Length: 508
Image 1 (cartoon, rainbow, N blue to C red):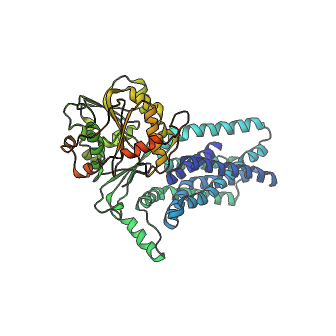
Image 2 (image 1 turned 90 degrees about the horizontal axis):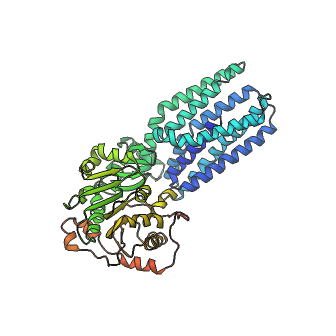
Image 3 (image 1 turned 135 degrees about the vertical axis):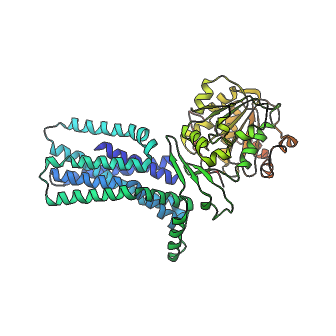
């Protein structure tokens, strides 16, 4: 019983995190609501008459249905909040979902008192012990075994089915009344109906969050729903590390004409098929122009889409490229998806590319190869896990893997969008031993760094041979921001005191 209940709570937190992008608040508030409900449920059990097996049966049926509909209900709350409350999204999300979480928490709180009353021959310690072990098992298996393969929508259906089987197992212990049989039939009908429509509901939700319709009057609702039904569905894949979404152009063309396919990780924009050259050309050729000699050994951290590789292959001097990507499904998608494979020109199958599926921190710490050029194409530090890839310790390991005149380039939001985060970044790089820093990029901002004390300036005649006009315009210097950030004292980002940064969204 506790296995299913804690599983529902984990799925509620993860679904809310998917909607808000705020991992800490989503986990904290859903757990708080769940535990509050458990406490209220336990207190309520004390005030109720002694329960019978019929009461436990009905409780399990109710919990199974409530839990099974949790993810679908959370998606409905998100869709309505985005439509009617776009400026107060989190308010709508938390107000709509936390009472639901507290409700199945209250049902969970009733379970143990019911079991203690119904099983007087079994000690309280044994019942509580098995209850805790069930919760422990859920805490381990739900995120590691179920969610990476079934996503939250599939996992909640499995838990609901398990809960229904548990309820059905109580029938031999009772003399089922007509009402019990009718209730079981109703619950089974609801479960079968939800199993059948859930894929369509999931697709509708995914379309809704990328279409981003907003309320413009009651008469417009019908046209919004009609537009939604005409759109091609985004491709979504859940991995052990993230949600990967490939969004068709018609979702973006409403606000940006001639948009291409767009890739999102955990709903955060990564690149567009039509404008990615601006980013990848500026990163690669800006970095290569800062190296004293053409790079021969290159390291890419992240970049599992393979889009940096075609630009690097424009330098015939390159001997090999080590690409470190933690998510094997990102590599698989880049190799097998026709659109991604066309964009990266099938570069991941080039013999000069050595793909390492592992954590970037571990790769830097354990390896010994040194590189002329390192390109850190990593997600922005929007969670504590990602923040570790922007710490002094990470940059210190990275500096040891660079040649003395080697260059590191990473993308990072400019100072005007997140001044504190930018200051923390440059101070962390400087403390890690990077003596010279250079920021550039009008639309796609980057920071270049080297252990050498030499000033970093672009060789524009060299760059112009490789880049288009968009990328060339993106090479504008932001060096005054570096000097200003270094002049202001700020604590660095460290694994011992990680920082969580806000306003980290990449822009279309």
